[in-house]
Length: 63
Image (cartoon, rainbow, N blue to C red):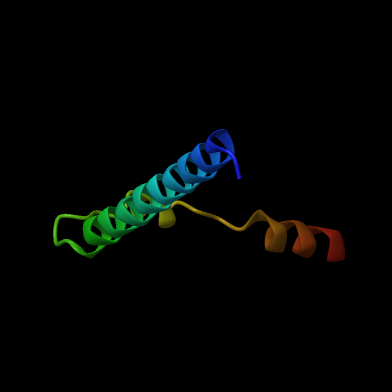
């Protein structure tokens, strides 16, 4: 193999390893944020206002 081919292979491996490390690090950081006590679910307030219109529509069609 030539020097250019080896360099390209090593560089590709370095880029792949760096990207993999970044993804794993971001996943771990995200899991830490979710498991922390300060994490708040933002959709919780809207859950009480949710109405399922499909059951009402079905009842109207049956009448």
